[in-house]
Amino acid sequence: MEIKVNKETCTGCNLCKKVCLYDAIEIVDGKAVINENCIFCGACIEVCKLNSIEITGLKEEQKDFSDYSGVCVYLEANGDRIADVGFELVSEGRKLADQLDVKLSAVAVGSSIEKSALEAFQYGLDKLYLIDSPVFSDNLDDIFAKALVQVITRYKPEIFLAGATWFGRTLIPKVAAILKTGLTADCTGLEIDKEKKILLQTRPTFGGNILATIITRNARPQMATVRPHVMEKKKIAQDKGDYKDRIEYIDIDEKNFKSKYKLLDTEKELNENINITDYDVIVSGGRGLGGSEKFSMLKELAGLLRGVVGASRAAVDSGWISYPHQVGQTGKTVNPKLYIACGISGAIQHLAGMQTSDIIIAINKDPNAPIFKVANYGIVGDIFEVVPMLIKRLKNKILLV
Image 1 (tube, rainbow, N blue to C red):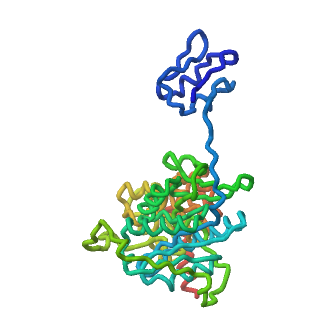
Image 2 (image 1 turned 180 degrees about the horizontal axis):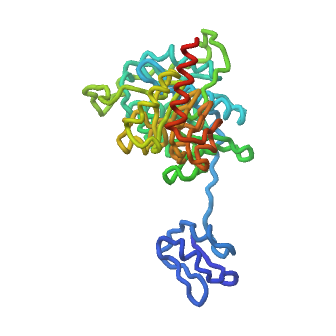
Image 3 (image 1 turned 135 degrees about the horizontal axis):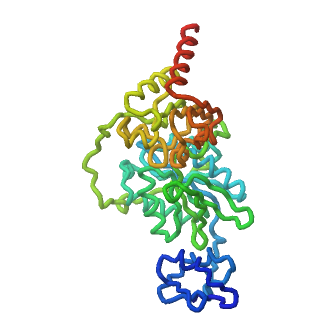
């Protein structure tokens, strides 16, 4: 492999030298010259307007993946219950499987989880691989990884999806490393390239400032984790009660699933016990509130709407409200029926955590605030005037009823 400069077309414009991070390019006699510092990153190729630079001798390895087929979802369990993100991914996996004209399966690993796992069939599941054993009563990632690797190796799905939960972010990279395949973490979008029949995996990058679409070219399965509440959970079938013919029970030898870890104890988090993802209405405050005491106003509004208070990272970092309330890329991803953003400008990191809400109402005195681009309804005004008016109207309506 080598990198070459076409001396006939190169004008020595210096653009390639400016983008090179490795001091690998010099301008000699009005032409670009590449030295031994080059690591073949390709930055110079991208910036060259005359296409004067190219990498030669790079052969793309062609592999046969014809024995891989289908979409498979990992149904993560919390105790004896399947986490909602698993059902969300079954709904999304159904769409992907239909586009590829393949089967949709899921694998559930845990203890006493069969009853909860059966719910996945209501979201369009074709096949369930079930490993139900007391060995998996605690979320110890090493034995879960071994179980998932065995299922994936045996049934060879071309796409494997899991939730980007605290456990998924620990478990799934281990699975990908053992299988020697790629993994795109924290995806916010999944699509099928209709021409190439490959999975397009989109995720925020560079602090959420841009969205990158990634493909797994030379390995299978194509693996991705997706943040909870990013995908819509949609039932497409009623509970028929009997799915025995579509379940494959996988027996394991418990002696082969001994963890190198020992769980000493579990403790509940001492911080405020609240999960904002459980609410249909979220009233969020941002930097525009100006202080912690102002959140009492939002709490009153949220209470009238039977909702909960959320916050932007700026408000949490300022110490105005605790972290469990934070919405955004570094907080919770939420998908309520109603999201009211008060004094939130709408940085892309915050939008990544709430833009899939059914209805978004934005209140901001800046008419050019980015939050208005995703809002269904926008109110340009002072939140300290608008919110009290909303509270008053809601109280009057409640009293009239």
